[in-house]
Amino acid sequence: MEENEKKAAKLLDESAEEEKEESADNKKDEKAKLENKDPGQLLRELCRGKLELLQPFRAHSQDVTEVEYDFCGLTNEEVMDALDSVPVNNMFAISNQQAMALFAATAGKCAPKIDDEEKNTRLYDARDIKKRLGPSDAVKAIQLAKLFYNASSQAGRKNNSKE
Image (cartoon, rainbow, N blue to C red; front, side, top):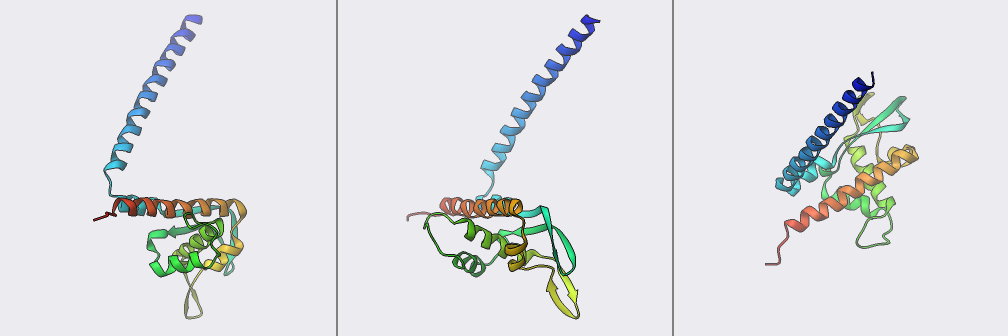
């Protein structure tokens, strides 16, 4: 019986080592793919998606369980309005309030449309996001907005020249 257990343990150890090697190879391949991609394309991929809410909220008598966002879908004016809606403390980074305003702008723009007595309105808007988003969901929303802001700066830096 002990011999079988030793063989099983040996097989498990070998398979774990193979998995580690495969995982390392996959990480190298992913890193190489990311390095070869256009910074703008990477930005578009990273800054679009759905935030599944830990704490759903109600809007127009419906439960909102996820919020779509697409930071690259915002116009320059929408980004500036969101950032300027909150006082600035630091010229080189955005505050949590600015990040929330930025996330709220994109979430409001990506909100699903509903029929409201012949009016074509959205299920929720930026104000709903700011007021009704739960605290843990707000932290993630802020992280996403800051990721977009910093990634945009880095992507722009690669496209900038001094000539």
